[in-house]
Image 1: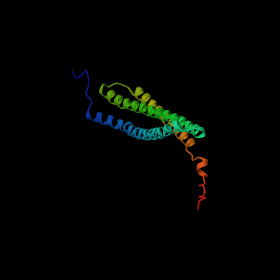
Image 2: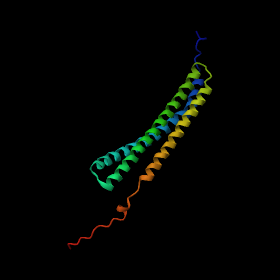
Image 3: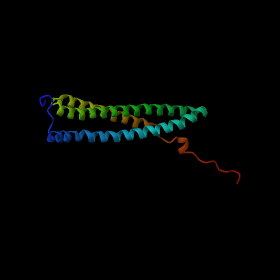
Image 4: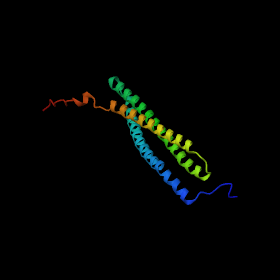
Length: 161
């Protein structure tokens, strides 16, 4: 019966756990990044809800400005969702790396190539997520400004006194 599956020694399991520590820390970093993305998405959604209400009651130049803003907010939501998707996919690939590390030890299989390919895939996905996040930041930076009519607004003098 011992020929069927050889049970790993404690030292082998400990070594596998040591190998799995780096990917697990990477998962913690991905989780933190997802937290940042989710917070940005929530703020964009909140702003979109406010602008959405104003679009329906505005007219003229103000209406056009608000429609432009809501379009940018919609684009930002899509971009942040893309970054979240890519990060989650990266996290799933990292989880598979850890699973394969332990599975290869348990069944005494040589899965080094598959593990390396999955790790490379995880890094590519996370790099794409970071690139997508940069795109969202640039979109936000281009649209966040105070309008000139507000910056240079002068209160009308009270002529009654």
